[in-house]
Length: 208
Image (cartoon, rainbow, N blue to C red; front, side, top):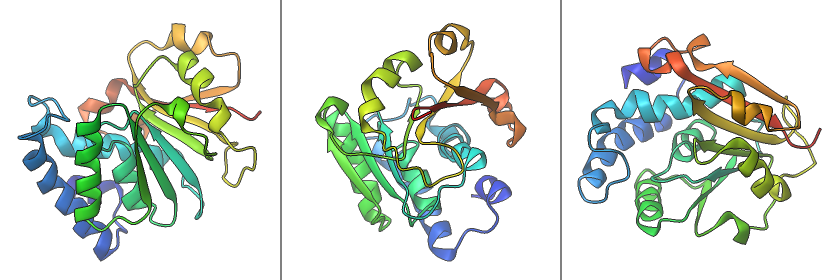
């Protein structure tokens, strides 16, 4: 919990309780349903929760913003972001039912009321969102094609609506294939753990 407070010291009591609870719940659920690599569950706070929250260092979502978490798995980055932005609405989608179930159960146990869930394909979702967020689900050009229909043109945040993806490694081929404006930021700009040395946030302006 101290790692989270290091970067987000102004959490409310409710948010602190929710983060403390998911730190306990994810290992318990992971022992039954594998949503995080068993080799990586000991790194839950840095590699999954803080990694998800890095998006909040890039942008602070305006109250009322609507976000889709594509390929959420067990709830990343959607659940940590939903805790941090309780006045925004998050729709979490994944094709694997057992992973969505874990995310639903954890969200219910911590009292999250600003999240909805969809077991299935993004093609079945016809809602509009301000941003699509994800953690390395698929190559960027493929994602742009899939979700552009889901992005609202009514912008309410500091950046135009679009995609915000957590990525790592060499992104040259992916980014060169995207023909619309994008921005890449190093997470190590805000977070100093070794894990973030090669991690990046990629923002794509899908309405520009």
